[in-house]
Image 1: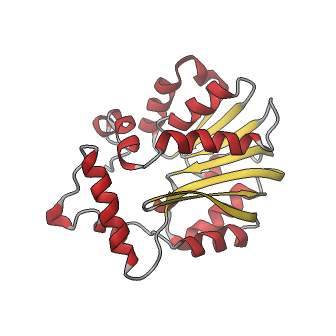
Image 2: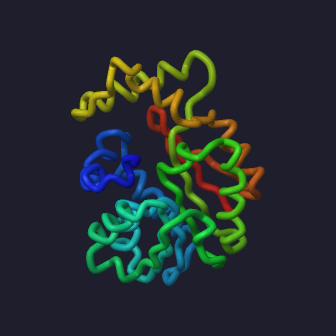
Length: 222
């Protein structure tokens, strides 16, 4: 059982992102604003990694005319998302699974926050292409996750992330290498590699809009 399937761990999930991701709330607000650049007031938005419901709640409260398809492989995380949204949950078509579980669309925009760093590098371009082909031409796609430069900087930035987490009451296990284990356990790519993958999947003009320690975010068009 991984952390996203453990009911007790899932119940604590909403406490952690703000303490681990610098500017977490503003990242969600910026994502909504970027999506709204091209999505109409009655837009249909695809949210990849909808478990927990944190960004969905921000989107739904700010854009009362938007409707959503929210997909996540964890049934427990989707239950938490429904609780997080409360009455707003009726505006979401919930899908347990991966991108293959998502309708063809076309959608007016899509987001994928704090997800892709879990996806093996060789699978990302396929996943990104499946997202892109479900979007209307010119629709906005926003993605953000761990992305660290190659070389000696890698561990430096992971150490900085650990220091940030420590100030917020989260301690990485020093006996297991601390935050540096993320660089070994997760398929974290460089910012250049991430931009190249977006272009390879058919997205146009990926632009960096968010940089926070080990995290990067891009906005691009289908």
